[in-house]
Length: 107
Image (cartoon, rainbow, N blue to C red; front, side, top):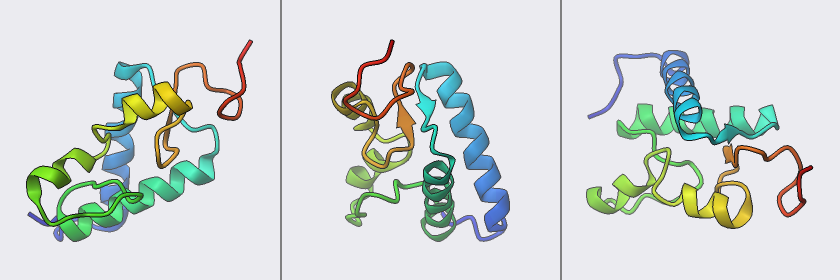
């Protein structure tokens, strides 16, 4: 179901709010690079408007609803990616203490 009744800025604001609440519950954080965050959120909003769900803009849709459900943000891969790399694939989310570049130790 598409969200054509809402404007892109409204969709973007709703996604940002939902994902900010997610970061508070999960312990993950948005990337400290606000340009990256804005770009990914814009991609999520565009996909929400076009396809009806906030699919990760960094992953390809398959057309199979069950498979594509795994890439609705936050995707089913982000926890393992953050554990392994310090950031998720699209670099939207980082680990709770991620203030430096991936691979560098904090503190």
